Length: 420
Length: 98
Image (cartoon, rainbow over all chains, first blue to last red):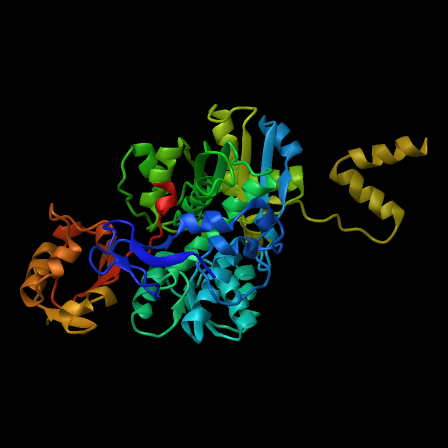
């Protein structure tokens, strides 16, 4: 049983029943789940959470669901100390939250497991979404697991890995000739017409709560403390905002001490409406037309941008935007230093972090967590050209040594050293 | 030819549950909103704040284009245009961070 009592408008505070609705009838403000934190505090303890399943459902008491979860084991992904990358960047306590290790290889499994569970509670037969790819993968997978129909809408120019990664689960896959923002608008209109659970439209108040679990996990994995600094990729801004909310909730429930985490957000320069507004010091987000290889972050009209700016100001974090070249460099740096192959959003985060360190925005001794939200095999197109092709050899030692010598000159030398 | 205006679910109480309503072409979106207010009293208040600007969480599209890429409230609404009113789908931080 959850500790939810109602939905409430973030802006005008009008309350609504816990229904599949998402905007305030009056002011169009977003609706949010209201929790009874007092009752939650009585019921929760670190020990109770630690005894729970190794998934987001160890935090079930902090989520807005009643029914049996639609569960493919999202969450409780590794938090790795990044010694080599930290040394490269000049950070002594850098950690990577590796959400590539989710069932459909991105953090979206966290939000979709909650949305799918809620959709089943409400009695929907179809799960739907507007997606830049990762969400479509996760919706299709969770619908399969739950025995629900899935209909997912994506921009038609997506990376192959993200298209295959949805199609395999057997959804109705709709490739829209248009940007993500256009796909999103279409879905917002369809949600008013069809009786489907659009996870990021009419399920959004519940769906978005799933992202809080990234904040919970990082705090738990650090030994029940909040990090000093988080760096998070921003598309709509929802993930960034909800990680902050997760940390704040743990403090409110006295599961951790008060939170002094600086929240920094990274975008690709070809689509950085939130960072641009932060740099200009205005709360008004100006939408942009995205031009970036970081397609998972290519949201030109970020719905949660306004709240992301509030969190950035409140927490004292920074906005940072990086070029497409830096995205590719960031992906390679992470892979070569730590053995983690991230998608483009991970490249944005790592290069953004590098920039913040170079600008003196992070202290060497801060506990820093970089959020790696999706796996690189989905966006191979972004890095293929930057990589060396394999050495092509005949199955002979001579052929191998010749090829190795041509490539670097170092390998044959090493062979010779050992032979002598 | 008239202008078609697509009404989102939260506003359909004001339009007798009609998904679309018709209006005349207008010199600007602001004028169109005034005309809609005449037909469906209460609509303007939902779309615009006290200063007359579009509310933060309201997106309006003319022929599929976000009016913020056009001329905002001054965008001309030509005959045959399709206007969509679409609420933004945001989340927020909730009271935990208040």
